[in-house]
Length: 389
Image (cartoon, rainbow, N blue to C red):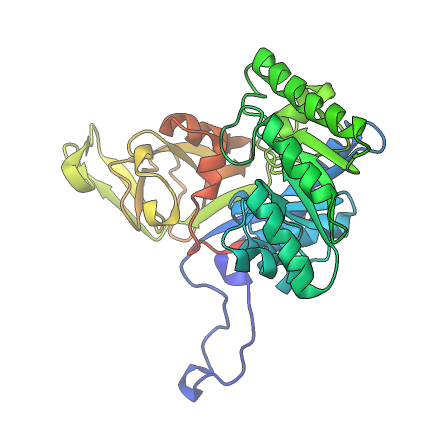
């Protein structure tokens, strides 16, 4: 696929521009989001959960860099997701404006008061993480003249937002006493679900204590949830009424299909002699005559500078090393091993080409980070194109 295939017609262009190709972008660097793979991952994840357990697809941070609107609409069309999870009011509003109608939970804390008001006005479900936020939700219900649903966050060990178990009971009791506010959900977040079963067990024990105490008082929210991808797949006892996968749905977990590919094209080719250097700092020097390809992608696009002289890309189905420092807008690659490479050839920086693959996890390891960061750091100047396989 080439970058020129995505076209759009925009009325009112200047007369001098009428003969230009109508493209969505010109610089040949883009990300492909495989919506078919995403739908299959949703269905596969749901199939591994017990019957009746609902699925909240987490699409915060622009769907982990995959394009929230694209992914949310695909999830809605697949009918494999019951809820969507976002981090902020702005993220939720953007999905509503994109036509998404699934229930949306704002997983982040809402402050100031106007944010809670905006959330409810746009059909989003806020959380209550303190007595003050409970009071604000009551004011929102009064201002709008309607009942407000919310989920209560319990901090059982993440240490981020939400009251501890005892304080959470006070928040839930306060909300339960309000006719205008319904505690629709009660949830926590697992801090070490991928690596520490004991820590996870302690969190779940504390969470169950809150559930039991509320049940003894006649309060049982219809949606109890705790598990992200790791929690749901590795700790069956954490599934409760709803699970909140993100990583697995984007194919960043073993056994699920990768959804995102980062691609570019060769825009310049030359052969440099033995001893020549490439890029800032002259950190790479040719040990032999070398064919060097330049790609129009750099750290401003989210292709990390830490990948300098370390990463590989795919050219003609072959792994070719990145040489020299990754610059803001360009990357140089040794394509000597791909003698057929030509200007305009497609290059894969994340994803598959023929039988070869550069997974996001490989780049994450080279940068000493996690796949979440690798894909979420892809900048807005990289167009996302929805494809289906």
